[in-house]
Length: 539
Image (cartoon, rainbow, N blue to C red; front, side):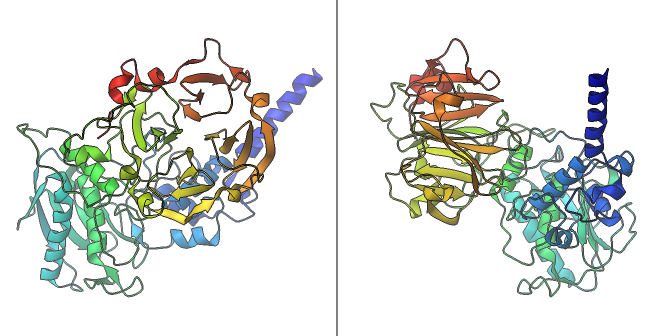
């Protein structure tokens, strides 16, 4: 009876930790008061569910919401309501929600699609009211220029008409302007738009007339709001795209001031998914002209996703580029002998490195078309910083969505577009003992996520959030029984952990602290399928 009473009390004590009244939440988050204005911001933009009593919002939900707010704002994801986060919430931005609470966040593409898009390829627009702060012809030119940018990658055609029966109606308005989403005066919300299928307002774009609008691209953020920079963003919503947490994306919700606005890679992929890969209503299926993409495009993903390497619906950058003729196949590499240099799950896909080649897989056994490619052809930003014979020893994706790649005594940090943090850097940053000259394998596992680093017969646990080594080196065979060392690669996939050595792999049971029965198995067949010989061709 005493034991039962103990567990009952323990249960309610845990509940009290997880579910506090609003007026006590500040005690759980660095003693900073979460006021009504902050809660309303997080609910307005989708970070917290608007249904249900506010008094039942849990501490965990508040902290998760704050981390997501910080992610969209490009801040360090602490989950604490610090001054930077408060400033962000008051900064200029779009009025469209950042997160759709009605949709599962467990499975996201690199870009965010919030609509099924238009079902026709020719769209009309009508500019019904222009603020007297701007010249009419200037506004019309900027609107046309912005639509042309989107049209390059969607194959949509836009034409201006002079009546209000247009597909997209563009206007300026103050406060309550007839759509149940009133503007808030100068600052904060600058404009909003409606996704294509949203009834009579579908596709429409509204700008807050109370803002200090300008057509001058040379003005900085403090000298007015540049119309074009806001318009090209809102058009993305009008065509069906949601917000992106990628700081440089046109679809990031926050206004960064006037700047050269180019359609980013995420935005291209979104347009490709909405308007290029599908046949629209009453459209005769024809061969589309090749999309125009920037020269030497960088690999680029939106950082907003809670992917756990289970996404099987991936749109790849090469799927929107002009097909290239195949080069002659490379002899002597088509024997599926394994011995891969590095293997990792990055942005929901499997990346496999061997010598100077790279494969990408949607899942084990499913290699993307036209792979492998030269590794430096894909990560072309590396070619300007390193020698051409580089080999990637290990790679992993940090909790902040940046990618770390190890090569010998150096490592590179890649944000999906550029090398950052003064890369390359020395692996001694990880506080390894001096005898460690390379990292053999890496994985991110657990909740909270911790990074496991393997070299020779040893492994370490590293916390990327605090940049600290949590334990000194331990023998791999003490924790990972049944695994053959030294480890070549590790892959975490759908909650499973696979260890690789040579052309063998083991499925590891974390609970039982040992490899599962029936292993090792053939690594090449697992990754490339039974016809792996045909997959070892490069382009």
